[in-house]
Image (cartoon, rainbow, N blue to C red; front, top):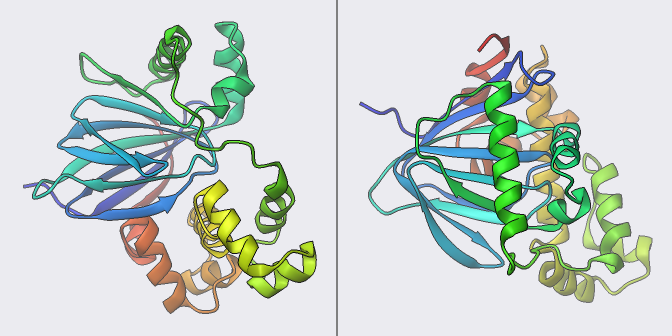
Amino acid sequence: MIEINQVQTTKLSILDGIELKAATFFEKDFPAHFHQSWSLAYIEYGSEYVAYNDTPFLVTKNALQLIPPYSIHKNWGDKNMAWTYKALYISDDVIKHVSQKINADYAYLKSLPYFISYAYSEVEISEASVFNILEQLFLDALDDHTPPDSSKGTNEPFEDVLSYLSLNYNQSITLETLQREFKINKYNLQKDFKRKIGLTPLAYQTVMRIENSKKLFYTDMSLVEIALESGFHDQSHFTHSFKKYVGVTPGRYKKHTNILQDW
């Protein structure tokens, strides 16, 4: 029997301690969010819907999906069916190495919202297989004469705001704070930021807090310490936000976090 709504994370010994997430969910909706690193996911069982720019499509068993850093997306399960997947969180250095090997423009690859392909056999998690998968995903995208539109678009007016939120993710920031800092009407900022980026400024900051909090689970810090260090007012607020975006509570996540295992 498949255990649902379960996440297990492990830092592997390959690729300088790459993080592997194994998860199973049922009737779970993940709101719009992003990851700070490249995310390579493989569906082992079932299917899920993924949406970029609010345009959804279904990915099924054996789907390989690579999502660049900060690409806004949301995903949810197919009705009445659990789905199981594994995801690897890959550093920029690995992606740059692959792009150089195939003579591809790294900036162009990073500008695309996602890469999708299907595996014809079981995916082996090893350094060689990861490089092969990345190469094929990138080559397929480069061969496509009509690549998907970037979900990022041109966000120059918001680069300073994004940088401010990223650097101060664990500080108390309100729309009034941003209005004072950037001399822009808070209501216009809220509306334009959501339209251009895909999240409100404060939702963006919450995702930054969640993403950074995950790194602390590999330390000896308590859940309360992780919550406060990540910028949450208390553990209750942390637990609610973490479960919303990750799918399980911080306690369950920490219980299934392992460090540097051979694979």
